[in-house]
Image (cartoon, rainbow, N blue to C red; front, side, top):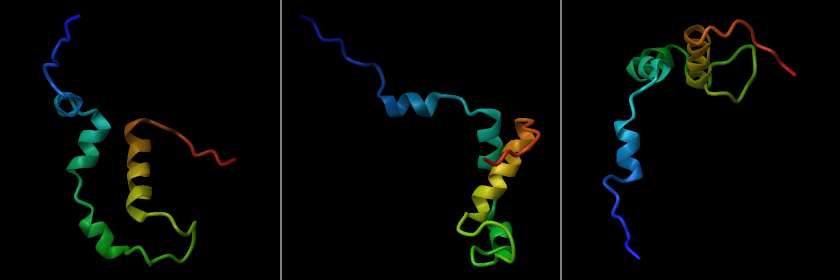
Length: 73
């Protein structure tokens, strides 16, 4: 029985994979200014315990992917 060597590793394969449109947009945005204005402890209303950066990324993703509404169960 012969064992074939792999040409590239799985990690190298993922590095070669092109970015999606959303990944390209989110990796190009610098969130430091946003986090300076709205630190994690800043919260008057809304859900508590959620990362402000992740919520902003979700709103950007909604616009890029044309997701019209939020549905809460």
